[in-house]
Image (cartoon, rainbow, N blue to C red; front, side, top):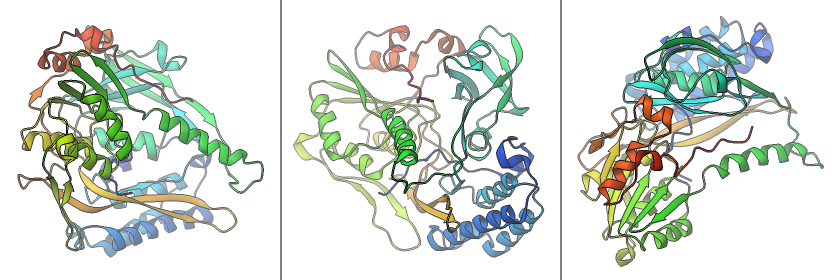
Length: 443
């Protein structure tokens, strides 16, 4: 499947990675032994291999790839732990400043949940959700603005780097937060993460299927959170699309529902992107003619990304698209097409700015025991109808509407309420905040 989704990966600068501390978990506490050294250097060799074989720019943005590889191979030799060796693998790829080129480290024998979620609203980071039953529940609250996370400032410039580091590269057993609450009060809190140990080695060939069941259950939990949610109220369909995963049959079902209404409010907030095929189906269902989404620029001549219309069966009503700072890739492409084709109104916050086309390439090491990891590698840049890429810049909404800290604390959603107003419906921010409650993945 072709992908243009974020896959929860982001570009990371070496300067920040080199400064951030690693979590003291499992092998992270141990000194680098010969096995760990070979493992780290093997991952770096595979990163080099993936870029040489698959990266869309054969000139690598002017980077001397072999020289860079030798530099980071030497850094790994000086790394004190396996985790810091993997940090060098991530940093090796970070120099490309490409949102879809990144390292997917081996799965860890534990799971970590911080107990809270945060995101950018404008240029500031806010706590937006709290998991019940965690240490965070009594210490942080929705609407708290984060000034520092583990002594590092959170802002739009560094947000992606910190998010990747703390979620994928080095999960932390505890985080230190400097906060400003909605009334202006300040406080410093230390929040213990929720940690669940898992098996270090999974036998996917075992006859009892126990380990395979563990993987399947996690996949089912994650997939459940991506189901389509929608609410029909009078002439308006409110559709919360969590990720671009719908196939053609699923898309036809959703538009069968949409045709009953005059206005479609499509909520793509926190949608990281996903399948390009889903994007093409979505656009094809809202235009009565074929639409060129973008030109694809890669190592060789590539066909433009096109969406074929469903013809007279397309939705002809009004469209309002909601986006925020976590709307990425396919979400951004859809929003920008709506603007360029003057087909709909985009409201909310400036989007993520991670718009490339990429594939996931799996790698592994070991004989009897395999250590899986992988790389997301960009295979095409995407140039829109106006001749511009929205990589790094994102999509600026037609109407910027941002929740305040007070809104987040009270559970109000002024963005969805404004969309309803544009649709001619009556919906208060408080009512809007209850329509699509946040769903936590089972832990």
